Image (tube, rainbow over all chains, first blue to last red; front, side, top):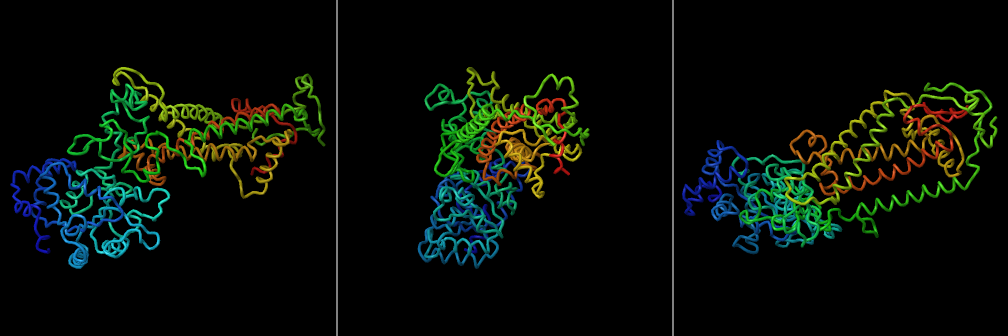
Length: 370
Length: 245
């Protein structure tokens, strides 16, 4: 294993029969995807040729494995092959061949062999209620496994919305007390790659960056890489022109829907969602939700499950016992104010002595503000 | 000693106004100016905000020929920026202006403020002329502090944070971008911004009613004072401002 980890990406690729032309093509594509200048391509190539691959421990907590599914479907076969060879994926309980006690033994050995040298990729999050019993791996709670593995990690990559912000299992009322990684581990550099799942190219882009520069990419306030989560879907949406023009789909089968107008009024969360869907798209760039005529549901945003219904622009405000949109609340309070004012006005008119005027006999003094 | 005149004789008032009224310059120019700028901006902001949340016009034809939503958003943002500037000018005038410019502040540490608050509330409920103030009374001041200042800050911070999303690398984002993660996410920030916006028409309703009531019941020229700056008072009225430092 040590031996494998010390090989560079290029070495491994050559062993797998990838020729140099394809390898260079991959380097150029990756550099472009990360927004690097052409002059940076040699750096990418050099890094791939010389740097030993990063050992990666990939943990699975409370999740659906959609991140892994997305990851192994990176757009080009060559890229997929390269990515899986680029990192030394030494532990991934859903992908590796080993099973049972053997698997956990590998993880413990890796921690011992590469203290502070491996990258921890976490897919899913850890339930914290009742001692974390709602997710166990190999007889131990995932909470313990996560903490134990994170302790000697170089950095942590939180894959997907589960690990980054909690996703569905942390949605109200969060029965298992599921918490995203950054709330459980506070002493390690963590990069959040939200999305349900994140786009494959975004995942590979993040790993490539770490491999090449041996550092985490520039992160925003909530730990997301700026290069992929710097803008809202809305900002790059090809339907944006319809938004600015004021042309909106009103129902799923109207004329606007056929003409591909903006889905804002159908509840599209594009204006409030930071992701690269409108640039990278999905499935080899085939399409993305808005491209297929369905609004974005905001799957890469914290708490997106609690911002429903997905097909309403304004969600319901949770007031105990009442489901109401902000407009309903405003209208009810407004009506209450009208009633209050109206009753005061009526009482004033009815009560004649309100018009009595009290006057002092003493001569007036000058005002302070004169 | 106070005596009760009933009914009020208009001829006598015209003949001997000085026996009834004194005039005091209360609201200085920046106070009046920011009041009207705020009133205009809040009206524009509320109406354009409702439109942005629920755009009802649907121009037909090619999108290149229309800019309806874009224009409404531009107006909303422009009004928002003007509101912020007016708000800051008013805050500056809180210190620079006369005592009346500060009279709306909730002096919660003073017993006299609490007495005035209670007294004003019961005056309104008893429908009596009560105690006339030259500046704000404690109840009015509390309403302005909550609706205009506190909720105004909420709208300014959430509004600028949402506006800054259009340029995530910009200065505005550095200054106000932190609001979004603080409130959870961009969507929730929109929701809070929208929900709080409803407080402003409710405030406007209460405000316009109560100044009309005060103006007619107290005969203090309250409504015209926000245009001219002058308020009228009668002897004895001035004492109710004593809790102001």
